[in-house]
Structure formats: C-alpha cells, structure tokens
Amino acid sequence: MNIEAFRTGLSEKGIILSAKQLDQFQLYFSLLVEWNEKMNLTAITSQEEVYLKHFFDSISAAFYFDFTPDYSIVDVGAGAGFPSLPLKICFPHLKVTIVDSLNKRIQFLHHLAEQLGLKNTQFFHSRAEEFAQQKEHREQYDVAMARAVARLNILSELCLPLVKKEGHFIGMKGMKGEDELSEAKKAIQILGGSIQKVSTFQLPEEEADRTIIVIDKIKESPKKYPRKPGIPNKQPIV
Image (tube, rainbow, N blue to C red):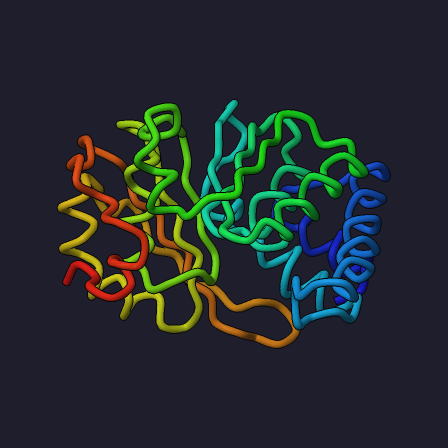
C-alpha cells in the first residue's frame, strides 16, 4: 500500500489526514526501520507493507468503533505501538497508555512519541498480569485494546480488568477471530464483559481476513483476575 492509497483508503472511511499527520506516519516508518536495525521490533520493514499491515490495519478498528469521544485507551502488548499509536495520530485527542513486557520496546516508544510530538501518551514496562492488579490502573480505562498478542480468552483476562464499567475491550483478530470468540465466551462473561459487536472485513490489496471484536464491560472483574504472570497462558479460562 503506497502512501496515496493509504490516504485514500482512510478518506473513504471518513478519516481525513492532514499534511502533518501524513508526515507523522512517514517519520513513524523511518524511526521504526532505523530502530529495527538495533532491536527486533517487526519482521515487516518495506514501506508498502508497513503502511498496510501495521498502519492501516491498526486504524481499521476505527471503521467499526467510534474513537471521537475523549477516551483513555490502554494498549496491552503493543510492541512497536500497534494499534494505539496509529490511532493516536488519527485521533490526537485520545489519551494512550501502552504496557509492554520488554523495556527496549518501551524505550523506542518514548523516543517515537517525543519525535512525533504525541501528547498524553505514557508507557509502562510491566507484565500485563501485574499491571492490571495495580490500583492506579485497574478498571481505570475507557478502552482496552490488543492486536496479535494472544488468543481471545487469554486477552480477555489481561484486558477486561483494566476497563472501567461501561467501557470497552477491542480485540483485533485475523481469520480465526470468530473461532476464538466461541472459545472465549466463558472468560468474557466471568470477567464482566458482554459481546457487543463482531465485524469482519478483508485488508485491502492482500485480502487478508480480519475480525474486530468489541466487548462491553457491564460489571466489575473478579479481583482474582488476572492471575499471576504466565498462568493465563498456561491455564486459560475455557
């Protein structure tokens, strides 16, 4: 996806990028490639692939969920900033918090946000299981998001405890998203969630299947969740 196709594709979905925002994406790409030579941030490094598989794919959540309110967003396991930072560029009013278990990635994200001039962003080096048990973060966010981190039943345990009541958890999945949703129904219910909307589409050009799952938080998550680091992965709620 070249830059013009990226701009046009978003414009067709009602997301109009300014020259400044397009410059931010270009700088994001340059910094991603530069830092990727020093640490493993992504296997995708060509400009056209980054714009399609990282930038456009991240922003696709906005095709099915309204990011115009003044939301606080927590992005669990964002790696090089996906999906929350491309969304932050498109919707600068968002307050974005990223938690990631690798400190080198956090260092990259601090530098990236500074270079792009992104305000109201914060980055935490922590395991998601421990982060969600901290009083200052537990059930404090309007929206929790995760992309390509773990299966949905595991993600629900990591993300839903961070979401305030009447907030939302958005799971961004591939072609097996609906299968994962079936597997995760018990976990979602236990953790205080209710499935609100499931949307499927194909990523342009390569026609890869994507699933956007929006889960509403209707009651508080039980205090014992998330369990200690590693346990959600080894013993997922099923």
